[in-house]
Image (tube, rainbow, N blue to C red; front, top):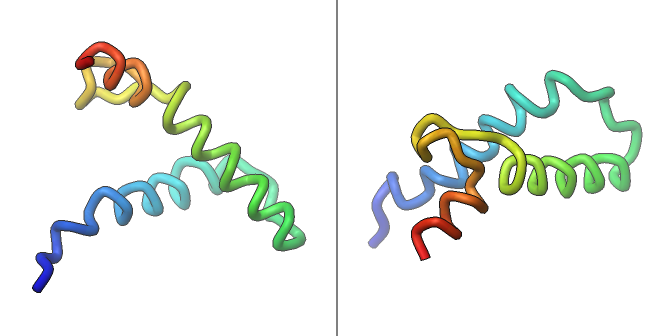
Length: 67
């Protein structure tokens, strides 16, 4: 049996995707454009966006620091 919080990282990502990413993008006109936007968002959230919870680092830099 699972716990509701097990899915919270993915729920948080989709929330940020909708509120932070899509709000600043032109609405995709096709599935291919949506897929491209999702790929760009993944790159942005992992390598560029700084997070207060990660001491102002991107997710990638935070993970590298922990290693």
